[in-house]
Image (cartoon, rainbow, N blue to C red; front, side, top):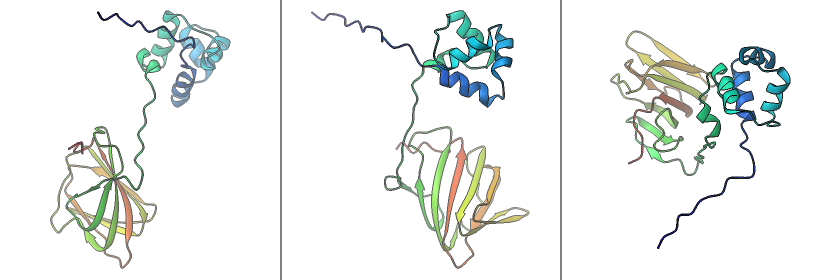
Length: 195
Protein backbone atom coordinates (compact mmCIF):
# COMPACT_ATOMS: atom_id res chain seq x y z
CA UNK A 1 0.00 0.00 0.00
CA UNK A 2 1.30 3.41 -0.96
CA UNK A 3 1.07 6.10 1.62
CA UNK A 4 0.83 9.73 0.60
CA UNK A 5 3.92 11.76 1.28
CA UNK A 6 2.96 15.16 2.60
CA UNK A 7 5.77 17.65 2.27
CA UNK A 8 6.25 19.86 5.26
CA UNK A 9 6.32 23.60 4.68
CA UNK A 10 9.62 25.38 4.52
CA UNK A 11 10.65 27.08 7.73
CA UNK A 12 12.05 30.02 5.77
CA UNK A 13 9.56 32.57 4.44
CA UNK A 14 9.72 33.23 0.68
CA UNK A 15 12.14 35.94 -0.35
CA UNK A 16 10.08 38.36 -2.47
CA UNK A 17 11.54 41.72 -1.49
CA UNK A 18 14.25 41.87 -4.15
CA UNK A 19 11.77 41.25 -6.96
CA UNK A 20 9.38 43.89 -5.58
CA UNK A 21 12.21 46.42 -5.30
CA UNK A 22 13.57 45.67 -8.78
CA UNK A 23 10.09 46.04 -10.27
CA UNK A 24 9.51 49.35 -8.46
CA UNK A 25 12.86 50.73 -9.60
CA UNK A 26 12.32 49.55 -13.19
CA UNK A 27 9.12 51.60 -13.24
CA UNK A 28 10.89 54.67 -11.84
CA UNK A 29 8.79 54.72 -8.65
CA UNK A 30 10.06 55.85 -5.26
CA UNK A 31 9.17 54.05 -2.05
CA UNK A 32 6.99 57.04 -1.19
CA UNK A 33 5.07 56.83 -4.47
CA UNK A 34 4.43 53.12 -3.97
CA UNK A 35 3.36 53.74 -0.39
CA UNK A 36 0.85 56.39 -1.51
CA UNK A 37 -0.48 54.13 -4.29
CA UNK A 38 -1.07 51.27 -1.86
CA UNK A 39 -2.05 53.17 1.30
CA UNK A 40 0.90 51.67 3.18
CA UNK A 41 3.58 53.48 5.10
CA UNK A 42 7.00 54.12 3.55
CA UNK A 43 8.56 52.17 6.43
CA UNK A 44 6.39 49.13 5.71
CA UNK A 45 7.22 49.20 2.00
CA UNK A 46 10.91 49.48 2.86
CA UNK A 47 10.71 46.51 5.27
CA UNK A 48 8.78 44.53 2.66
CA UNK A 49 11.53 45.10 0.09
CA UNK A 50 14.15 43.94 2.61
CA UNK A 51 12.09 40.83 3.51
CA UNK A 52 11.91 42.12 7.09
CA UNK A 53 8.13 41.61 7.28
CA UNK A 54 5.54 39.17 6.02
CA UNK A 55 2.61 40.93 4.36
CA UNK A 56 -0.98 39.74 4.42
CA UNK A 57 -2.37 38.38 1.16
CA UNK A 58 -4.47 41.54 0.72
CA UNK A 59 -1.42 43.77 1.20
CA UNK A 60 0.66 41.72 -1.20
CA UNK A 61 -2.10 41.86 -3.82
CA UNK A 62 -2.34 45.66 -3.41
CA UNK A 63 1.42 46.10 -3.86
CA UNK A 64 1.48 43.82 -6.90
CA UNK A 65 -1.51 45.63 -8.46
CA UNK A 66 0.25 48.97 -7.97
CA UNK A 67 3.32 47.54 -9.72
CA UNK A 68 1.31 45.69 -12.44
CA UNK A 69 3.12 42.56 -11.29
CA UNK A 70 1.33 39.19 -11.21
CA UNK A 71 1.34 37.96 -7.60
CA UNK A 72 2.33 34.46 -8.72
CA UNK A 73 5.49 35.72 -10.39
CA UNK A 74 6.91 36.54 -6.95
CA UNK A 75 7.03 32.85 -6.11
CA UNK A 76 8.40 31.51 -9.39
CA UNK A 77 11.94 30.22 -9.11
CA UNK A 78 14.55 32.15 -11.01
CA UNK A 79 15.38 30.37 -14.24
CA UNK A 80 18.58 30.70 -16.15
CA UNK A 81 20.32 28.68 -18.80
CA UNK A 82 23.99 28.85 -19.65
CA UNK A 83 25.20 28.16 -23.17
CA UNK A 84 28.99 28.13 -23.18
CA UNK A 85 30.94 29.15 -26.26
CA UNK A 86 32.23 25.58 -26.61
CA UNK A 87 28.75 24.03 -26.31
CA UNK A 88 26.91 26.44 -28.62
CA UNK A 89 25.63 24.28 -31.49
CA UNK A 90 26.43 25.15 -35.08
CA UNK A 91 23.41 25.89 -37.20
CA UNK A 92 22.98 26.62 -40.90
CA UNK A 93 21.28 29.94 -41.58
CA UNK A 94 21.88 29.63 -45.32
CA UNK A 95 24.76 32.06 -45.74
CA UNK A 96 28.13 31.30 -47.28
CA UNK A 97 31.54 31.77 -45.67
CA UNK A 98 30.02 31.85 -42.19
CA UNK A 99 29.98 29.78 -39.03
CA UNK A 100 26.72 30.38 -37.15
CA UNK A 101 26.22 29.24 -33.56
CA UNK A 102 23.01 29.26 -31.54
CA UNK A 103 23.91 30.96 -28.25
CA UNK A 104 20.48 30.89 -26.61
CA UNK A 105 19.06 27.62 -25.28
CA UNK A 106 17.30 25.28 -27.68
CA UNK A 107 13.57 25.71 -27.28
CA UNK A 108 13.77 29.36 -26.20
CA UNK A 109 10.81 30.87 -28.01
CA UNK A 110 10.89 34.54 -27.08
CA UNK A 111 14.26 35.44 -28.52
CA UNK A 112 17.03 33.72 -30.43
CA UNK A 113 20.65 34.89 -30.44
CA UNK A 114 23.15 33.72 -33.02
CA UNK A 115 26.86 34.46 -33.04
CA UNK A 116 28.33 34.41 -36.52
CA UNK A 117 31.95 34.40 -37.65
CA UNK A 118 32.08 35.85 -41.17
CA UNK A 119 35.04 35.30 -43.45
CA UNK A 120 35.98 37.98 -45.99
CA UNK A 121 33.43 37.69 -48.80
CA UNK A 122 30.86 35.89 -46.61
CA UNK A 123 27.28 36.75 -47.47
CA UNK A 124 23.65 35.95 -46.92
CA UNK A 125 23.31 35.35 -50.67
CA UNK A 126 22.60 37.49 -53.74
CA UNK A 127 18.83 37.28 -53.29
CA UNK A 128 17.03 39.27 -50.62
CA UNK A 129 15.40 37.10 -47.95
CA UNK A 130 13.22 37.56 -44.87
CA UNK A 131 13.16 35.84 -41.48
CA UNK A 132 9.95 34.66 -39.82
CA UNK A 133 10.21 36.98 -36.81
CA UNK A 134 8.93 40.40 -35.80
CA UNK A 135 12.26 42.07 -35.06
CA UNK A 136 15.77 41.36 -36.23
CA UNK A 137 18.82 43.00 -34.69
CA UNK A 138 22.40 42.82 -35.99
CA UNK A 139 25.27 43.90 -33.73
CA UNK A 140 28.82 43.96 -35.07
CA UNK A 141 31.43 42.90 -32.51
CA UNK A 142 34.38 43.29 -34.86
CA UNK A 143 34.91 43.85 -38.54
CA UNK A 144 32.47 45.32 -41.04
CA UNK A 145 29.17 44.11 -42.51
CA UNK A 146 26.95 45.70 -45.16
CA UNK A 147 23.21 45.05 -44.91
CA UNK A 148 21.26 45.63 -48.13
CA UNK A 149 17.51 46.25 -48.35
CA UNK A 150 15.30 46.81 -51.41
CA UNK A 151 16.00 50.55 -51.58
CA UNK A 152 19.02 51.21 -49.33
CA UNK A 153 21.95 49.71 -47.50
CA UNK A 154 23.83 50.25 -44.24
CA UNK A 155 27.52 49.70 -43.53
CA UNK A 156 28.01 48.57 -39.94
CA UNK A 157 31.36 48.64 -38.17
CA UNK A 158 32.46 47.32 -34.77
CA UNK A 159 30.04 48.54 -32.11
CA UNK A 160 27.23 49.39 -34.56
CA UNK A 161 23.76 47.88 -34.18
CA UNK A 162 20.98 47.78 -36.79
CA UNK A 163 17.35 46.98 -35.89
CA UNK A 164 14.68 46.25 -38.52
CA UNK A 165 11.51 44.18 -39.06
CA UNK A 166 12.32 40.52 -39.65
CA UNK A 167 9.87 40.33 -42.55
CA UNK A 168 11.73 43.13 -44.40
CA UNK A 169 13.63 41.60 -47.35
CA UNK A 170 17.38 41.97 -46.89
CA UNK A 171 20.76 40.36 -47.31
CA UNK A 172 24.25 41.07 -45.99
CA UNK A 173 27.88 40.78 -47.02
CA UNK A 174 31.32 41.09 -45.47
CA UNK A 175 32.95 42.89 -48.37
CA UNK A 176 36.08 43.79 -46.38
CA UNK A 177 39.35 41.87 -46.42
CA UNK A 178 39.07 41.10 -42.68
CA UNK A 179 36.87 38.58 -40.84
CA UNK A 180 33.87 39.90 -38.93
CA UNK A 181 32.16 38.71 -35.76
CA UNK A 182 28.47 39.54 -35.27
CA UNK A 183 25.47 38.79 -33.07
CA UNK A 184 22.00 38.35 -34.57
CA UNK A 185 18.97 38.70 -32.28
CA UNK A 186 15.63 37.42 -33.61
CA UNK A 187 12.37 37.92 -31.75
CA UNK A 188 10.32 35.86 -31.45
CA UNK A 189 12.58 32.95 -32.28
CA UNK A 190 11.85 31.82 -35.86
CA UNK A 191 12.52 28.18 -34.92
CA UNK A 192 12.90 26.47 -31.58
CA UNK A 193 16.04 24.50 -32.41
CA UNK A 194 14.73 21.66 -30.29
CA UNK A 195 14.97 19.04 -33.01
